[in-house]
Image (cartoon, rainbow, N blue to C red; front, side):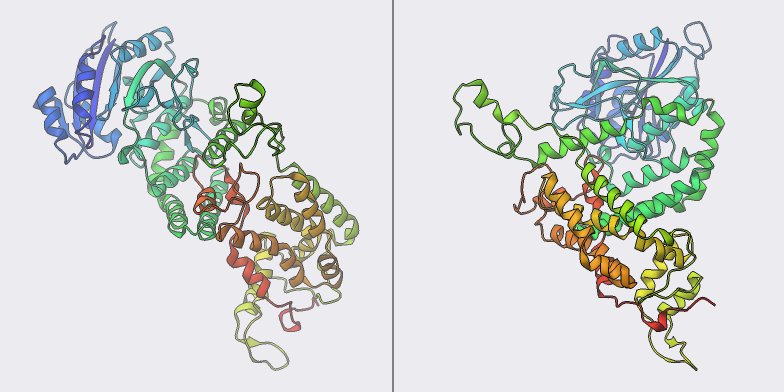
Length: 590
């Protein structure tokens, strides 16, 4: 097998000498070693030229894949032979801050020799300064194209992942790629950063019918804490949206586009709730940047379609399951925010064990025992379902009705445009008309109509039907911020769904009061979290330590979407301050 090693340096002069020494110390030496100076400003280019020679180092652009392609132009491809044919020529991709173990290349070649279907092989990544600490052993992807290692922080390498083989992707540092596959896929996508380019390249390789494996016996020291290896939230979010759109089916592309847009708006609202408007703005900006980059997206989709030989669903078997991702994030959050003395014994919170170690097995390990619990949202689903069934039975005539009238409720305008004019116009159409401002509650009616595919009257009917169930979910979410026990949350949900104020408002047709009853728990939850009084997940009661509540609400790829339960406080306050619909804002159907 003919191996061409390419060392890409974008900074990293402090790590480069060790990397070059590690390449030179390989038991199985690469046949050719090339360097790519990717606009370094710390002398990395000079170090490459001193070690490899000026003729083996190319001045390359900044993207990792483009730098590799530029370096490969320095030498002609070897003449085809039994040992260096299309399947015998390999590329070994290295970074300046990634030093391979002396046997890394030999282990990689052994793995691809045993399995000819393998086109991409990767290394086990360990920390540069702590060789026993794992960084990743192959990469996973969620259904939202998140790049996940599913390895806990500071997890030690004890061989627990050495049975991994076929993976969704492997890290670019130390990646061994068959040359003909690299050429067919045209390398990494230049529209992506390196930390997402490897995920996309392996994704396309799998869709082209090739295997992607990790070789745990091939170890690689990597400086994962460098800024170049830790993308900004903007770059990370943009890459996720771009990958979802790039690999979506033609029928699913519009849905993915809309989901990314609304997801960005929700991230902005969540950022204001958690008092991190910069993070929310960055996520929204990243989503918009990916959604509006139509030229790069169209080019990427054409290239992916040109090389795809298997169905898109083929990669589902190597994707991370929702349960795996949830368990990982839950364990990460609990280890970061929970205290060891909060949950002890049988998990009920009682502390009968001595406060000092006694040597007794039952006492000293009591803090490790926790109660076995199922999904905490089961009660919310049950209560909301019961409330919905009761509401449908009580309001059965509303199903399929064109409009609802009676009490304080009149049929609204049939079109969203008319409702919008009523809300924003400064002229009241009563009699001959008179100057006056629109009713702000009409904006709420307009939003309800937009959700119901442009039919405001059906939106009003379904709001009345769904009101008890939505009120129950809101009360459950608010109670979850105060207690981790299930029964108090169930009691709160039932009490709020069956509140006389909600039932009377529904019976009298006071839509404003119904919407306010639904929104009040979410507004209270937003205020509770804004002042840091909400319970942190993984603790028993309210954690009032400064900074902890705010950190727990932070949304990231390694944290569970607990903060996604709370909507922005701004719409809730708008709803609470809006008045019930007046006669000037409703129009009777002819």
